[in-house]
Image (cartoon, rainbow, N blue to C red; front, side, top):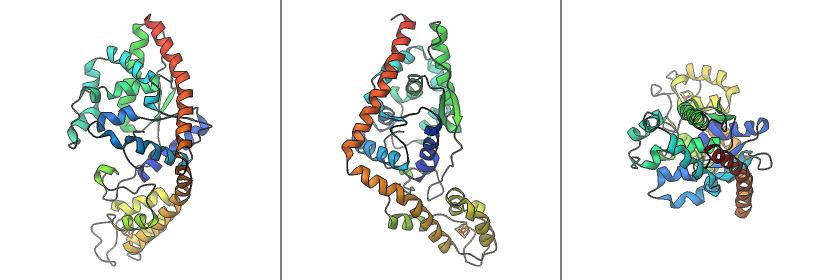
Length: 318
Ligand code: SF4
């Protein structure tokens, strides 16, 4: 995860809940991807350090267990860059230029100039991040499948060039995680200023929920609502699925108003966030402890990474 600001509800239901489940089943490596963040935020990277601590506090508060999983900062394990360099030499330019997410970002991101050498090579660094730990599985959303395919192609190319099966071809573990839109219905993102952050105080959560976009055709309380086009209803689907059948019927027959509906949703979100925020507050009282967890994780990650790099170099006879 890139340390580019506060974590929000989209991160919780789209990523962290999934990580917590994964760590029960797998030996997991969770990485603060600071080099990746730098590729996008190179003009103003000053906030990254603060985001790292803040984000990891959220990870831990959400249930990531450092005893069970390895948590570390990417740049503290220098082997990521070594392997990135090796992979950069053998990755054809065309593979990167045709990557759909690369083309999409160039088209859509207008606030930063992403026409850089580093940004084009983003998926190569990702391949190094994954293959350094010879991962069997990578939790990805469908939009990231092309990146994982590129990782598999790079692994295959390396193994075939140096006639040694150093790297496995990792499988996608498609996340069944929920996608959560932002307050305005667009993708939840700090750049759209439409997030509910995991650290938002109760009053802020309640105020933000009141600004959410509902069914635009429902102007008066007596107008029947259409839950399927309502952003608030989509949140009920994720955070209170047991309430949706009743809400659907009450909304459609105009017996329940949007203001009350939002108030209830806000209460549900406040209740969901409360234990995370309590744990987060305690964790942030001792930032050194968070740094120690990350340093310990970096040590564990490094020992795996060094072995992989050694094997890769041996295969290449360098
Ligand atoms: Fe949406 Fe709730 Fe209003 Fe129906 S009552 S339109 S679900 S906010």
